[in-house]
Length: 132
Image (cartoon, rainbow, N blue to C red):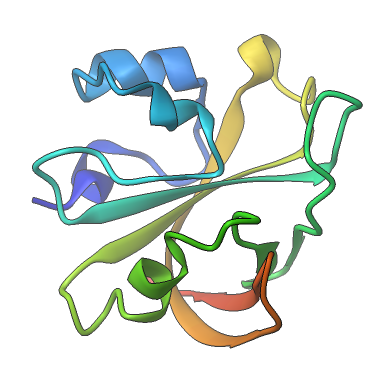
């Protein structure tokens, strides 16, 4: 099941709202990459300008292209790289800074696909927004 069918591109969602919407109890929802149980979706949470309590990853949305750093340990990198082969959608939630939206929310930017990556720990990804 794709979770994109329950989300509206451009709407703001907090993690609390997403937790309720999808009946999530998994605390890894509060990390940068999350796979809701029993779904075919991977959620990516990206913040451009980090606050002092956040790891200094480099994330930047440039039009329909997201330049995004994966997690330092890299455990979920392969799932992003192989998402299409495995029938998974990549959904991007983005904000310029932590307090840009009420409740530290994110704007849902829609479905993206893996284009390329370089480096490791963290891996630097390039993702492209899909047309509706």
